[in-house]
Length: 201
Image (cartoon, rainbow, N blue to C red):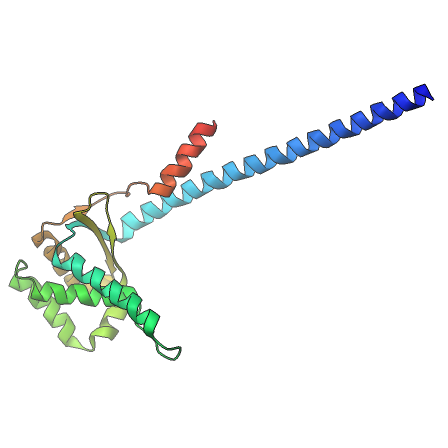
C-alpha cells in the first residue's frame, strides 16, 4: 500500500509539473504575441507618418491666425450640427467645411496679398463651391501642437488645382507659417509603446 501510495503521489507531482510548464508556455506565447503586436503597431505608425509626409502639405501656424481659427470654428459648427440634426438630414464632410472656411478666411484677411485672394475668389466663383471643393480636397484639418500658441495645419488638394494649392501656401507664408518637411514626430501613444517595449528588454 505504501509503495502504491508513493507511486500515485509521484504521478500527481509529474502531472502538476507538466500542467505548470504548459501554463508557463502559454503565458510566454501571449507575452511574445503582445510584443510582436506592439512592434507591428510602431512599424505601421512609422509608415503612416511617411505617407503623410509624402502626400500632405503641413504648416505650423500661429493658433490665433485666421486660417487656424476658421478651421477650428468650422469643426465646432459641424459637431454642433451633427448633434442637432435629425435622422433624415445630412451634412457635408467636416474636411470640406473646414476647407471652405479656410478659403473664406484667406479672402478676408488683410495680411494676405491681393493676388492670393484673387486666385481664391476665382475658384469660388467658377461653379458651385461645394461641388468644386469635394472634387479636389482630400484632407483639411487643424490639430494642436506641444506649444499652445502654435497649431498644425494639414491639407491635400488634387494636382488639377495646383494654382489654388500655391495660393494657400502663399497665404500660410503671409501668416508667418512654417512648412514642415519629412516624417512627423512620434505621437504620445507611439512613444508610450516604445518606452514599454524598451523597458521590457
